[in-house]
Length: 222
Image 1 (cartoon, one colour):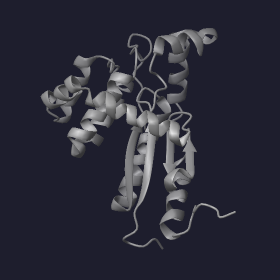
Image 2: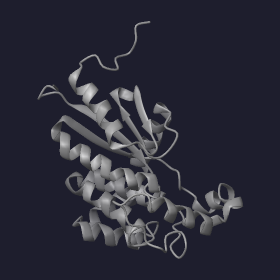
Image 3: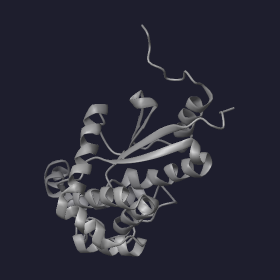
């Protein structure tokens, strides 16, 4: 059995416009419910949709562009009962970049950590469930207000360049850990990485192993 005082870190890299990260959020929520203070969840952000026009013109150029991508996401969404996709995402609602949302999230994480998790949920749901353009500064401020986070301190952070610097820190950590996509879950100081549509059972198995064994995943002497 895991010791009561042992604590491990679960670092979650994601892009808020990534449907697989939206799907995986419920699994991270379950980890927090089941393990409480034993697992410290650290949210980081990586750029998969930093330039959506370029992504659609290249990756999806031969598959229908925005419309093809929108159709694909609706098909994916049908496989998961715990998510709800608005029919307008990537059709009428086409955010140009996830970067403004990531910067605002980093500002909230630094300035108002107690409400950061709720804000992250609201941003994800804002796009996927409400078809809100989360690249738009006015929309992001609306979501801050809905979460109960004062807007003025966040704006002041932007005037000083702090959210941009904080996001750059996530980018450096992504490169250091060789993160290749969204979502990626990192445990054991980077020795264990779970990428993509990973089920809750797989995440939990890795957590249980680290909690019960002081040497689980330790670096090899060989």
